[in-house]
Length: 517
Ligand code: ADP
Ligand code: ZN
Image 1 (spheres, rainbow, N blue to C red):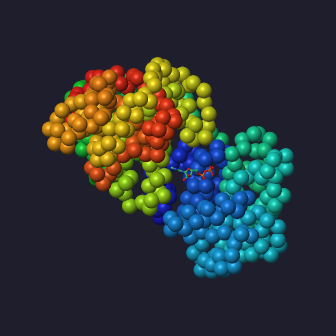
Image 2: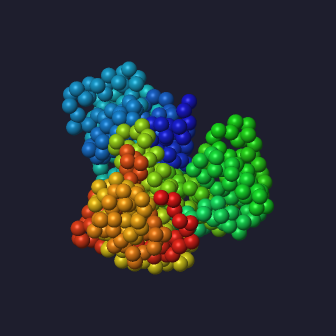
Image 3: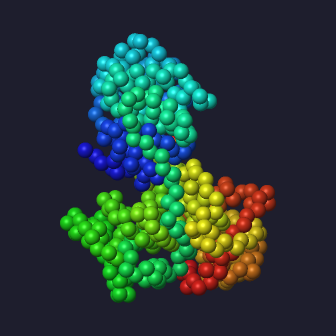
């Protein structure tokens, strides 16, 4: 049978679980009664949709919102999952098609509006189906004291008794009184497992750095932590091997790990990491799922992860024992370009690509955050946090500057060359650098030629990187990565909005080798 990991990727198109999802999915799939409290937008639906595919027969989903049910059914069908809804909003044909799928034994998820439970005939009909799980969305609707009380939700307890199957209940309302009431009314005498875990991992220190000489940066980070177990994540297999060798040459215990190694070698590497103290594994994302080592003291990313979810999952492998752990994520314009083109060149349908760009943008926003990283990260997952005191930005608040004019100049150089060029050439224009290419194209005649002399080349690179990070510009996959302007940049170009950027990244960039053009 397909594993949860495979289904997550292949059916739902996600590269990693969100915080908390994996534990809930495992519990629900294995038939435990569960109550999960997750913030809105945290990704509750996956926690019953994925188990529904693993379990036999049919999963009943009870949800109070008809529009939401129809949305989910449509999305599931587009992903190739047999799902249907019985609601008052159905056309006759829709209802018929749902019944046909049920009788053919094909349907995996059946969404039912709570009103349906009020009729004896519907209850009788549900009893005759091969139901193996009841999922209850917005479970707080069962609470009479809450603001969303739905009398029909009280029948779910009855339904559970009649069908005698596990119940998985979900809500974003965490107060204790409501929780107690949900348990009493939905689970009766049974005791569900309750998942109420904030997403925050306060013992993990968060830090990002502009990638200038990644090999040296990783060696420095690792050698300051000699004797501690750590993971270095790399974007390519070749890089895991060369970086592991570099660490060994610097006198550290390091091995590589990637998906092209044979299963035996992989198992041996996992075992060594598990058992030895102070070993470093330099790995692709293939490493980690099966690793349960509580005292991993640090995780470094030599290359930018795929999405904010992947980032969270990968750094989350550090410090499971609750003791302090450290992380460092390197990122540069090449990472952004690579991740963007991986999405663009993938086979996913357009909406999924747009969502993937969004998840990458969220990670880039985190990389270029102007204040507390943890606050930025948790906000994305629906939680809040004040200044955490345990991230690089809390340690050293970054200095910012008004970059409105600089960004406008950069955009103007882009537009005047009709979005046909990459950052290197645009910077030549801005700084008035007369290369052959500049002369050949007559770009020394442009009004923007040389208007950006207040910044050095390396500083412009940092500005462009931050512009990419804020999704003001994107590389065009069909034009070899030439930059184009996104709608988000329009208000700045038109002078309707201003923008601040980080000054420290400009300084950090000073040590850069001159970039190839
Ligand atoms: P809620 O908890 O509010 O019901 P949803 O289940 O609707 O949240 O999920 C919120 C959003 O998160 C959706 O757009 C969904 O596609 C996305 N999402 C859920 N799980 C993941 C994941 N593992 N990786 C990336 N995105 C995810
Ligand atoms: Zn912080």
